Amino acid sequence: MNQKIKKQIQTLGLALVLGTSAASAQTLAQARTWYNQGDYAQAKPVMERYYKSQPSNGNYSLWYGVCCLETGDAEKAVKPLETAVKRRVTSGQLHLARAYDAVYRFEDAAEVCDDYLADLKRLRRSTDVAEQLAARIRSHQLMLKGVERVCVIDSFVVDRRTFLQAYKIGPESGTLSLYADYFKDNGHTGGTVYETELGNKLYYSELQPDSTLAILSRSKLSDGWSKGTLLPGSVNEGVNADYPFMMADGVTLYYAADGPESMGGTDIFVTRYNTNTDTYLVPENVGMPFNSPYNDYMYAVDEYNNLGWFASDRYQPADKVCIYVFLPNATKQVYDYESMDKDLLLRLAALKDIRLTWTDSTLVDEARRRLATVLAGEPQVKKEKRDFEFLINDETTYYLLSDFRSPQAKTLFGKYRQLEQSFAQQSEKLEKGRRKYAEASAEEKKQLAPAILDLEQRILTLRKEVNEAAKAVRRAEAGVQ
Image 1 (cartoon, rainbow, N blue to C red):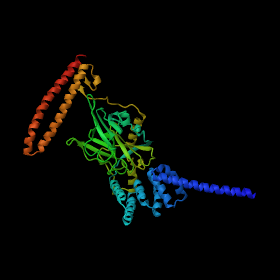
Image 2: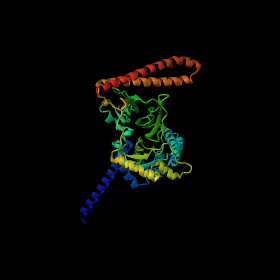
Image 3: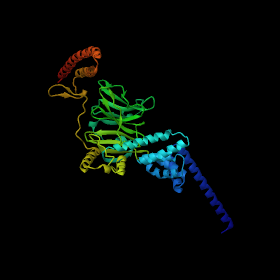
Image 4: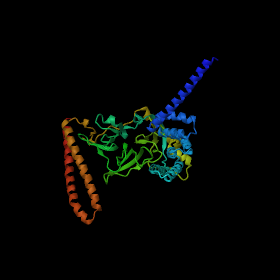
């Protein structure tokens, strides 16, 4: 070969090697910048390439493992993070404990976290983050002893932004909407809105001045909706509360929230309205398998079709969410932790395979047929929308304002409803007063008695006014028939 050509080839080869090396260094440097900025999705493919080229490299293992963990791929994160811990890479134990926790290996997570805490104490470093993680892992271990025995009949992955469109609950169970769709151009921001079947009550989440989401309610009045009021009690305290759903009993509320009582991210909670105290009871975490170390939310029950729905981003990429459809239990039933095979229990808790929950094939087949009908949009027997129930005569009952033919009757009916509402409020107030009176001391009873007697007289008067108003409505409507 010509000596000159040979030299040119060698020079070109060296340039290519140096160029490739420089490009690789630049790529790793860029990936590390993304990593440090928290842009794990961008950094992940680069870190994966470096990890696979040198799987025993502690730093590459840590960086790739954390990228997997932060992008929702905890199972892939475990192996590289185990390598990082073996190589004694700083913070490796913290992230491995998180990964073990995310894949339901709670005992392993606790052991690694305890080792990490011991190292931090020995080095006299802050243990705050590690102690918070240790407490969370312990709570998950306790939750594992109360996994609900629930039959999940189907699941499907949808786009996160439009996940609510996948919910096919019957009109008898109310309606779900996005805040932006329901309250168009009102100048506020929110999450989801639930409207009851009768269309007389709203529960929705809205951004508050402190930048947290809180759940509010509104009631339908004769002249429109009332102003939104925050739910009383501890529902909104110190958390972001969203995705409300009220059961048909008007008492049981499901919603989702983050905070210290959550497994991680957003969890589903349930609370009940206490009519005696006019507030909601302390919310309860519904536990596994509904909740997970990921984000779980929008629990809804279609009582007409006997199907429950909830959403979770467990095991999903950032832009996807999985919708689970299940058979609601009349009462909570849990697996026997002591006698259960632990590996099976973990798989049931994590919903790794929903077919493991199919213990009654007949129930599953029937439920899947109902679901198929719902998803196909086939017509069902639907109840007519009713805003109220007002008897006109022995043969006719009105349910909507549009049922009235007489404008005068419609106006009189508005006054009737106001009187009726006042009567209901005063009756409730009297009932509370009587309960308070029954529990009061002799001295307190003397103080309460005059107010109760006054209320009783007021209610007698209101009852007469309500009856007379109803008669006036019927007479006015009869005049045009």
